[in-house]
Length: 619
Image (cartoon, rainbow, N blue to C red; front, side):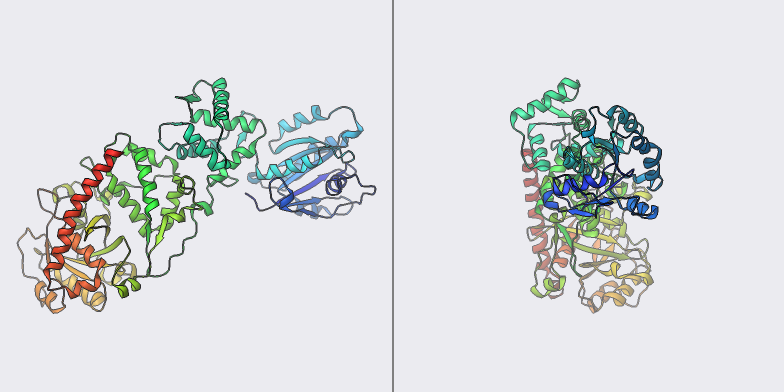
């Protein structure tokens, strides 16, 4: 909502503009009226909307036309004052004042107008018959008020309506000619309905309506009040209430009714609570709350965020198969202005046999987004209404910023859950296959992936000493001379060469010597395509000799040319090295280091699956 409101009073001389202002301030009619009142500011604590309000008077006798134009450009709302006993001043509203204001304001951001009929104490009839056709002709006119500065009639109401026209404008919400909500308002309220429909059954039941009411207005509805609301809808439309809950049509009808009865503030309170600005766009403050990320720190979702995302998944997994079909994904993202996931997501995270994103894959994708682009993750959580449903100040409450990696190294332990492995190697060495194998895809399955659907990332969970962790694999483009800091910044490096290509290992050796020989980042040599015949490499040292010389683990054989899903052992090893970089070198000769990690992984993978199945039964 606006920080303050600026009200400008214009009109013909002697219609009582200055008297209106002075009567408001002193609460009595002034004996002497100056040509123009000084600008006054009403403090926030004495206005109904708790917003400071500036009231500005215009005097033709004291001010130039240029000064008038400046005031029009600064005003948030303009009151055109006429005298109800002066026909000429009424005619001037349409012949002079409205055209003059429209010429001086941008067509797309017209300032709201209020027609003010002063001196009602001097006549017995109302000017409304004359004014109503004018109101119907000009959309910018919010309302008309008849008042009397002398009798103090409707003075405070006049300035309240002026405030309301700025803070709760009708223009963006409602089309008076069509007597219906505007498309942008329908779109915003539809998103609000979908976010509030916690079980996604297309109706707001009593619990959801009460939660919505408490969220927006800090008070639940009494059972009788709930029934009264539903009865109003039932009386006016056949499909507004279904199974004793409010449908989207009923929800939109209620807001139309509020606006038609002059209660725009009700609809605006709802819209603003859900993050909308005066143009019905989600505000930058709502979508992108501040999160400070110091150097060498990473971003992860916390426990509450995962619980929320689990509830969003449950709400859209209609067939309870623990995977999201394309239709279910589309339904989930209906509250977004665009589709955030492309076809590459299906080759970045785990999918089922039909290629649909699994529950684990869905959480993995959210984990990846939060790690790589926390602002994007905050935006997505904003569209889903995280801060509203979890009653937080902002979705920044969903994010954990990990401590500096140097502290982890010093303390020889980490609280992080996500570890990044950069995968480097010459073209054709098997990097893409290595990424896809992590998602359980063998070579045969990989060959069916379309070129334009491929991903440079793969993320899934591994278990290290019984702890579930995320390993994020990133395939780095093999342009040796253009490796950036981002290409090199990671927790563990995997250097891939093709055992069947004699020129493949040289790239790995060069990259290691150029970038990683003095680094504290653990490195692993991967002998890819190990199902093929191993040939002698065109390099001065064999891969085994190179690893021995540089105190690296021996090259790890790997193939994805298998009938079943490829082995996951290497991914557990990479995660273990990322978690315990200080041990990776110390335990070089100690095979039990790997054995302990691998056995722990197997046991906990089985346990984890059993627990997950139990969880599903509860769901």
